Image (tube, rainbow, N blue to C red; front, side, top):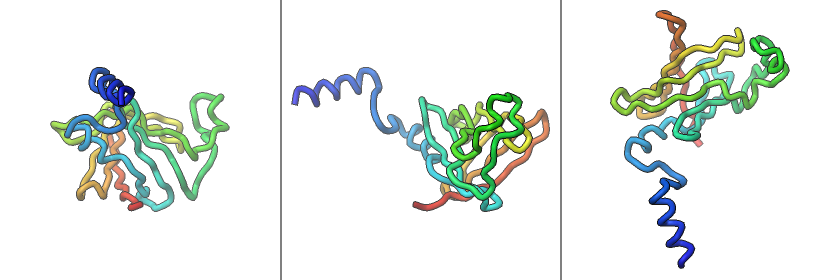
Length: 144
């Protein structure tokens, strides 16, 4: 009993916990899950780490080595498991995830990006920017 009370007090004081703390956090966590890419060739898992959101390849038809990476030391790594969507923060006012980057292993370039959900979280839009130019892809959530 004392142990449970101590853990509760520590969790409240230090903000330690396993789940979202606020309604905004719960809304932000709507992105967590697995999405099927536009061409149905890959599955991308989104997850939260240290208050930011990331995505990695968890399955795909075209798993290759990262041969176009500008860092020669990374050119032998597999794209399977590669975290290519990094450091996105949720902006509750705008309803978007922003401030992160998207790495494209097909050309070895990294782009600024923006992500948002549509269709009650069943559709994910991922937009990569290069200056004023951008490209948006649409992915569908996989139900588990």
